[in-house]
Image 1 (cartoon, one colour):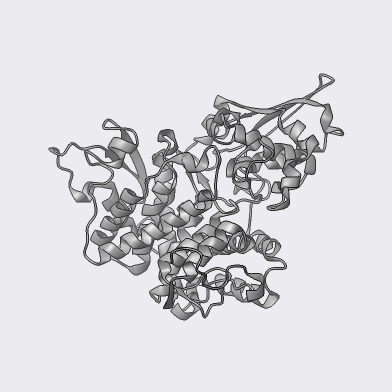
Image 2 (cartoon, rainbow, N blue to C red):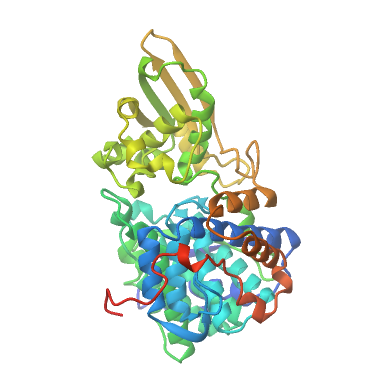
Length: 502
């Protein structure tokens, strides 16, 4: 890997386009270095993972709404929409919108945390939708997804968006545009301009994940997907983009990130170097914010030592800066302690999550968030005894550059009314690549089966899994079938309606 320096250049100091970050990113997308078997296997895992969480969320209101919008844009030879029959196709940007919302709704797919946060699996819906509409085969789809992950992960390693209260789709959108460019085998110049256009239109604030968190948390990555598809389309028609988008005098760095004196170093593969960033990402065993995954596993372990939860006087979670300030008491969000808060807020409250996991010893993507569960009196009492503290040790582990040393957990002290203490810690979730039980193909399929049980038929399950596992060999026609169909009578919003504008 090389580190590409990025800074703001005054207009009088010309920066050659080939030295710009967006150009370097585009060069990665046109590099056709062979993809190794372990990377191919992980792409397959993540396609299965995305589908499992999308189908489980298919009838939730935001997903149904997004699907209804997509159904208003039918297109012969277009892209499929999760849950709908494969013989019904829609414009790829709207399929990206519907599928991206479905994948994101439960906050249950893959993650990568470094200088910033990300869900790199959000790149798959737009790249797959474009592949279906443009008649691309499995190898071409694979190349696009791997490129999208590579760009996304390396941007997240280098450039912190959260520090400046910008939402993480600002890294997702250019990664998706680059992945689409790699899929379509576009020239460097076209991908370069597409990435710049994607950056320019995708900077939004983090209010979408602060305070009263609404359904926009699920829609935001889908919006990014749609923007990426449209950006590439515009550039393919001969249009340009604001440039240099990262380094310019009035660029995103100068006015939305670290300012005119800001400097970054973005790690990028050398020409001919394998793209392996997807192997640094990790999925979720539990349906909750990733920084809670290890703490949920820890709560399961610690809860076994408590007979009566009313005997707990106080619980202190010592953890990283990000965990404390984003999902902990450091966020200063009273909603995170509110029993009537939305699911979107509860899955960003480590206080709530730890209390329920401690009591139940299990976690369920629906039941653990139900109003009945959140408002249970004994849970509310326990929940309100929990606070978080930043510990420099855990902040340092969170930011470790070595993937084998990076940790997202914490140390928990449970003080009992009798003065005794229960103390334990866990660095990474059990399902993490460095955890006690790293997720393998069988685990991804088990997760798929658990989340789709009672929703799809056994034949449909077998058809989809078999198709995924043959990804590199798929013809363009088979890529068009890379979708999970739900029996139409089990799917809400399965027909075009007239509720909105479309």
